[in-house]
Image 1 (tube, rainbow, N blue to C red):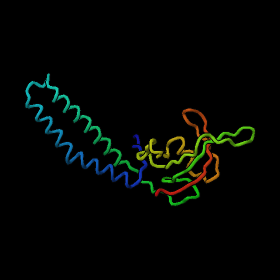
Image 2: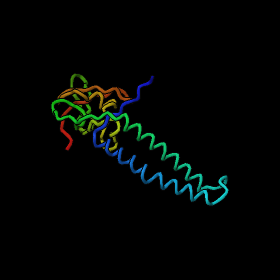
Image 3: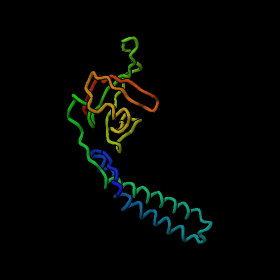
Image 4: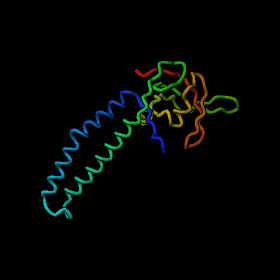
Length: 168
């Protein structure tokens, strides 16, 4: 028997998912059913583009509903850390990419700030990275001053951990 995957997330993200599911069940399903009913009233379904669009929308809606139910059912609530000595879930980390050449540390680019979050809360464009991502996984458990090597799809990267803070 295959064990269902667990999805790491905070309590706030779980509540957002539950609210979205409730909206689908109480509002969107009725709206799509009404669209289908109206489209059927136009007659011949074989050449009825409104009916096809409504069926497509219904398929997307049921797919999202199933996805939300799976996420909620298999949610693993992870509490944000309150420790600023080591990187944990919820930590905001400031890192500097570095290279070591001739025993000298060379800084590459500007320092970057990332927040380590569960996979369902990740938003890379807003520097919210998953604890399961290469950078997130490598940072967990490290302290300020540590050099952290990351195996990324683009090759090995080396970061120095400059600061650990808590989410505001």
